[in-house]
Image (cartoon, rainbow, N blue to C red):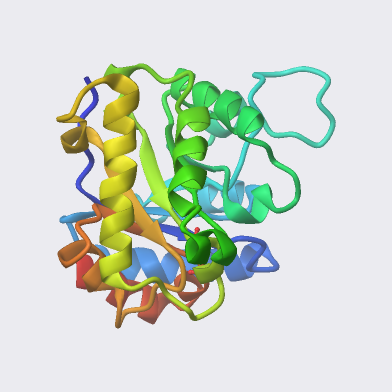
Length: 255
Ligand code: 13P
């Protein structure tokens, strides 16, 4: 059985920064600012293009590398795709899968399920993203939506592998909007998701093995509440991860 990670904070740089130089400067500042921090696993997910420069710089061995997406096949005629094996060669250990920004441009639950399986097969921790629209939230449909995304995303995952998967709850309406989810709602959703997963595997004690993360307009002001009040094991940070001082404050708030 896999083990639940320490507190986990993931920086999702999305399609920023614009050059190797900028990416390296940001990475180095983070590595330096976090060099004494032991209580939290910090994962940086740059664009595929900036991963080599970061690795070759030899900096930031206290930080882990993640990818923002990947393909599910190992190699072959798949134009424009990046494989798990290619990422693994650069020391990547985590991969964000099914992010709302990819679901919006057509990534399906079926595709996500294949990617989750491929990530586990190569030894990565897949960060499976789930979330609902504002309409789903307001109409009460959110629970069915999340249950469906979880059921599909975990379809090829065995019970004993759950400790190697992270589940990211990212309400679509909170991603990049400055409208963060309240701690109470986030807690209720976490419990619902963990309960659903317990149902799939017929194991009511599964929550001890689930790495539940929250993402969506996280700042240094609200970060602590998701861990301390809502019971998440960590966070995924988008916009605020591009500001090293703010990102370091976020990490310290959950440590
Ligand atoms: P923001 O932190 O910019 O809202 O992005 C969060 C995100 O991508 C959650 O998955």
